[in-house]
Image (tube, rainbow, N blue to C red; front, side, top):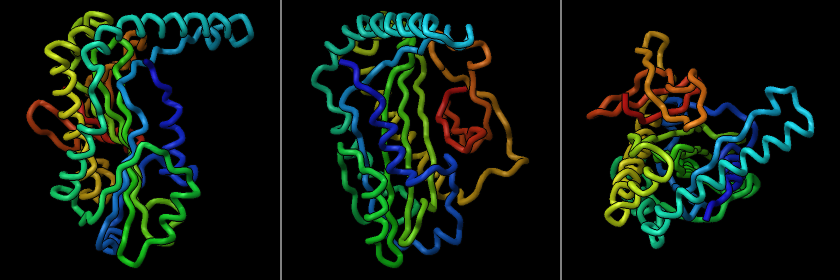
Length: 285
């Protein structure tokens, strides 16, 4: 039932076009050049996954064949345990379709809430190689822009938190790299005590807790994208810095329990912060 995340790496290549910073803010100069936007949304993944934390015995022992084999055994054991824990959740969510939830909401909000005028939204489950991305860009007319959006979703390794990760890149005619690019991460409030107990909790009432957080994640992701396009510049050095809880999973080290970033927005109980590399996070304090 588990799917590989390798597809996400392929998508990232297509979105970036080449090695480049994770965050490229949209300048006011480039924003003024854009009259209309065509959007292309990619969702390769067809079900929620949980990916075990890799073992780090080899790194601690300085490498070598035996430590590498130990790492492989430990990581495989962790993944097998997650697989068993997720079985009860999959039974409740067997017929769900993330794309059917995501794409209508994405299309609606891009037309209604996106700061730039979106005229067309194309959805696909097929990753575009960099060559195709650049061909689409070269075919753009004056005043036209192409927005690429790629979304992945997974449970934390303790199965308590749902995460949505979205890469976005905006191109204009003649560009060799995007005029805007960033990564947005949503994390839900933790559910349950972890492992199989949390997996069962996600699947209760026909998967209602899971679907509710998926919808929240979609809304938060699109809110982050709209904020990022409107902001037009990195946050100033004087902006408020905060530490926000983040669930990196059951094997996370003590120093990986939070994200330190610049406060960008606060609504209800949630905050949106910009991390050190420029990416946006929607988290609960």
